[in-house]
Image (cartoon, rainbow, N blue to C red; front, side):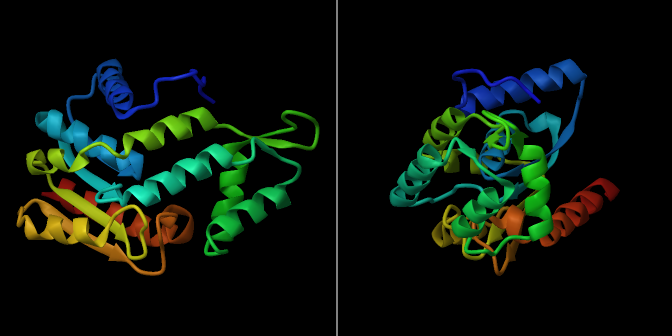
Length: 217
């Protein structure tokens, strides 16, 4: 488990973290896979460091997101309960949030790794991630992320959840109309922005197949 600084959760902070990690590991080239904000960070880092990125997979990035949707997610992040009295209460929270359209086995894994048991008191469960980080991170999404897109030169797979609230149909269409030969597209039905909890197998298959194809060439 990592530390939770009081601040430093905007996109430029994450970009600096990726750069520092690359230096620490001594990596010359990487393949980037990012979901949601991670996809936005991947877009920016790949555009800024084209010689170090072999390929990128971007899962439901927040592109063309309506301001009202941004505000809704900011309110949700701020209003999320700080702790839960049982695992069942956690399940109810997520089933309500995603209309029960969640892989139950994956949700159990998320609870196992995403919460501290017996915190803040015996029998309670609290988030491992910083709630303040979630609020600060959502402010990042209003930036002009699309400005980086023309500068992506590596093979790049965009994966969109068909009912996504964050990756707008207009942005999806505009990407395809750019006509960049290094851009590839896949849309997954039966999922919204919670795609990683709703259709994990479909996402994993697309990622693995794309990475294998790129690295085979």
